[in-house]
Image (cartoon, rainbow, N blue to C red; front, side, top):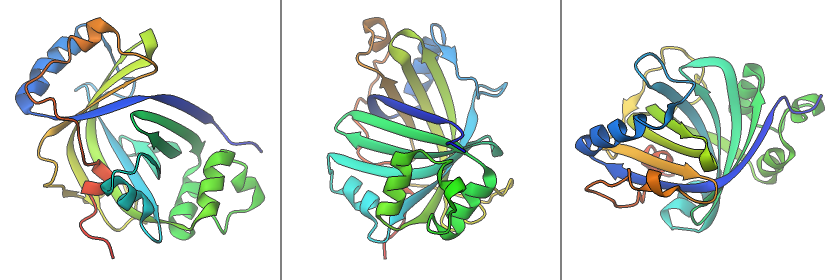
Length: 234
């Protein structure tokens, strides 16, 4: 059996902290010309829940803190607390360019990776995972370190695959084995009091989209949701 589904995306990604006031203005502008994401509820948003993995030396965490240009992180992700779509993903970042490799896997396989890692997987289970993801997981021992969940509003524009998202209400949980628990109890991350704006596109951002994205605080985001969710490193 081959991997159930594989997606390989390479694009530019920029992140910003914005105020609630800027969020209201930007959302009004963007929603007038962009399409809402398919995962959105009637209220226009949806939850994103990820369990992040790191090496025994916490390489992904320290690479981000140290500003290493070429770095990668691994996660399992679901939407709206449902397990009908489970994604095992690797994000490889080099400067502003991000490559995302994603395999859709089963709940049982995801739980097995969370509980005991990939060393216990049989050949059929390994074939469900994209080879490049499997290589990274086997190259170093990876452990689940934190669950991060937040509410997202996402808007799409077909030209050059533009994707703009607003992430808010970021929460975390350090015990990871109950990742698929429907009513998971999480703690709000006080280090992220603002809304996170993410702008993603393939090769260039169309001028008329760029002009919409003017706001008072245009500082690029220097900390990730993953890093902010980890209180301390042993």
